[in-house]
Image 1 (cartoon, rainbow, N blue to C red):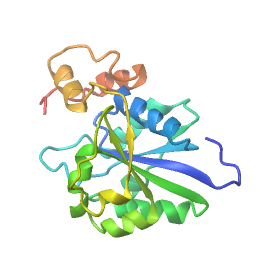
Image 2 (cartoon, rainbow, N blue to C red):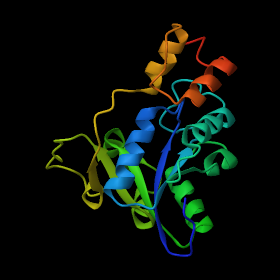
Image 3 (cartoon, rainbow, N blue to C red):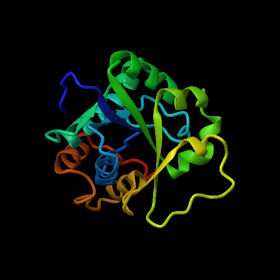
Length: 203
């Protein structure tokens, strides 16, 4: 990614990435191109406050897989800010750290439609909106509801293509001994099989 002295506009795309798949990369790339961002920073969570119903693959392994997934992609980089911090990964804490580390950067937080409904329950939502532009990934033809809350009115919608790939489906396919080719990059597929991930439970 270009790190010249100009003010960069970077998208922040977080998640558990268990595992990272091509749908993640396609969606992030689409937002980056649509909004003319200089690049995307993918941020694997150490532990998500919204996904406490199952144990996650070790954070260091998920971080390694994301790095493999974007290796050689100049518009994408990976931040270990949440893995370094440890504990539950709150978005506001991540944005504060990234703003401190990159004071000459304009941050754009990229979230999904499922996040929009629960945004008001996030930690310090007002401060999130003050630090970063928030962009919500929607589907083509999506119409924003008329009764959106005050937070949603400050967000920007960005339609992304329908991508029928989900991490839980990949985990289930691995558990069942089925192929995950064309769902993840070859490097991520090799890493998963090499370490024997997702063989115990399809959750």
